[in-house]
Image 1 (tube, rainbow, N blue to C red):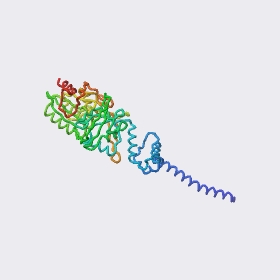
Image 2: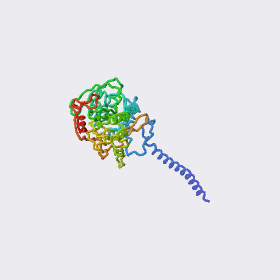
Image 3: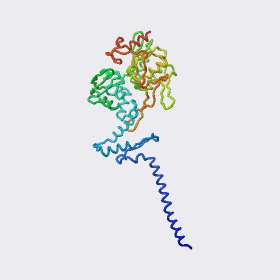
Length: 422
């Protein structure tokens, strides 16, 4: 027997016995590592102080991008920033989230932390403390969409379209909408000074406002001469339906020959409120608005389903540059479906749909998910509605105040009254 052959076989056996398990171990380790990497790899390059930050809820499908830039920036701040010992991690996360939403360059999409979310919900409920303005950021400038009826802003003479440049002594031209709102809003009885540039003027104006509890009136009406009713809808916030039902019921018993719907300086509110009210003035099944989601999706079509009590009553609608959002939906529906004439100034052009998505810690994301189209398919967003009769008001008169109606100075109302009386 060849002993060397036996020895070689034993040696090979031992080597094989060692290598095979090692190879199996390496392969298993590789795949386990690969699997873990695909699941948690986006955490692998975090700076060590960030390892305790939770990554729950990471989307499964994210477009290509290099997150290392973000984490390298954060890591450098932790390593080198002179004030790194006092960093507020949650504030940094909120700031980064806000920046992510701002990159959409959509003035109506915004991240709201828990405090801002609470304030926003209070405003839609019909009560909050502040000066009473609907704001937007237009062309990089904080802009008044409309002052709310009876608010300190309206009483002080703030107008739709005013550009807010400073709040007290702070220049806010680089501020986002949420930062500006935080400065302007405050407890009842406190004051705030706004520096405003009015369209068509070259010098700024200062308005000192005393903040107050804003209990928003949504709807009211009164009878003019010749049995012509004036229905004022100031917003479509939460109380509007109950106030509208009360007004509509009173109008039914008063039997108006015609109705003037005044939606000047109406900043909008809930879509559901606008469609519900539209059902009183349109026949069942009439299209009110189309919700266009883009990306080839079929639009949602909202149709009238109300009691159509006033569907045959002659109407005319007052609008201006402060008529926005849900009020543009109602005006557009009446114009397209019934041929109702609009009197006043071109509307604001806020025709996008925002969904309020709850996030962690009570914060939320208000994100634009669709655009509104009138029944005839006309886009409202950034275009607005052109009036059939363009009428400007005198510089010394503003609509929507508590002052007694003046058909001589309120030229828009005067024109609407003349047309509907024919």
